[in-house]
Length: 85
Image 1 (tube, rainbow, N blue to C red):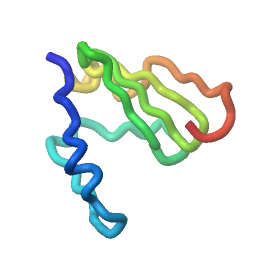
Image 2 (image 1 turned 60 degrees about the vertical axis):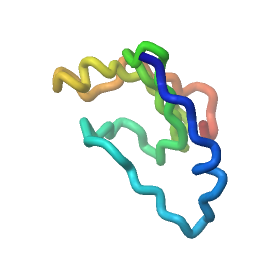
Image 3 (image 1 turned 90 degrees about the vertical axis):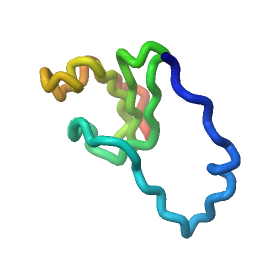
């Protein structure tokens, strides 16, 4: 299954003072970035996801390996663009 469609009304109604609270179950701590993670994208099949960071790197992660406690290391790092991602 694909990702559910975003609820834009909920996103636009939040003010800067509202705190975002994560939902779900924590699966793993991904500690490879040296800066704050600023974005995340998941492929349609939910097999891989990519994180972008203020450290200037993008990392590709294997969802299946993380969920099965096989590996908490990224599969690939791209860091040659310089600056924040």
